[in-house]
Image (cartoon, rainbow, N blue to C red; front, side):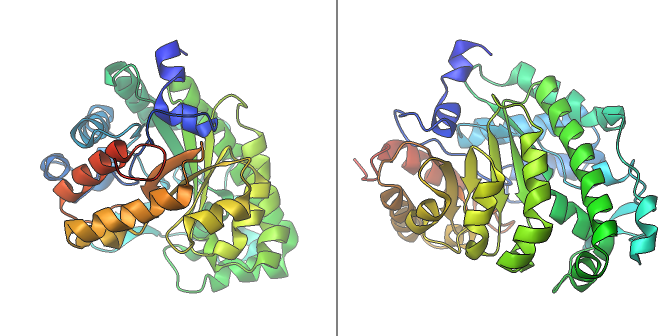
Length: 350
């Protein structure tokens, strides 16, 4: 890795090294709130955008450039990897992703094929190469994937869920089928993330978007071992952001599963969250995305609260607690990035 990239703000913070100012990037920084993204999106469907490398590269690069953030994140989606694994995936208009052949019983687990050859996801790696070629030399590119539990939940539920009853039922009633499903996902996701890294990503984020539905006991017994297996299988010299949302009680367990950086959502105070995961980890977060819908003085005050909670400790990467909402004014996002950079690492605006 070139020294200018290895010494960039984001990677220094991931290693808990001092930075000249707090690094910032924004989840879903290329999205519907941005007119430049919508100009591209109107040309194609969402899945076509994900599977067209030059367009995925364009929206990734445009967002990084316009916002001035310290990292780009690959424009892709969690679920296309499930197609070569045997899932019939559709992005229904106005309904989000739907899997038309979810697992209806533990006996069907063998319908989920392990992804042994990751070349079927070539469009992702092609996009990574295009983005890395055109990114500034000091800006890292982040890849990502869903965590095993979140991916298993999509496979079992078929779409979003309020209580994840089918997933939890399989987890509780047939541990053998659950283990088979989770281990296949772990091996597949490990190969997929390594391929992203080999194509040109400098770090990766694991999204456990749905694990917040779990009790600590269920997470510890039925999820944490597989998340740890995935994280242990990734290169040690590539930072991994382990991001679990929806349940601050799980943070110590998520931290124990691994990851050089632990993502914090807005449901926990950053100071308390960092204490829960341990100060031997970097943390990412955690402004509530809804705050960006407020007036600028409110945004600045709440952003300052996050910086103050970080207390200038090396290892803080500023982000939202989840993705930018579609109705957000892009000027608010640009102003937020500028504010964080001008505030410096000590948590007090100069």
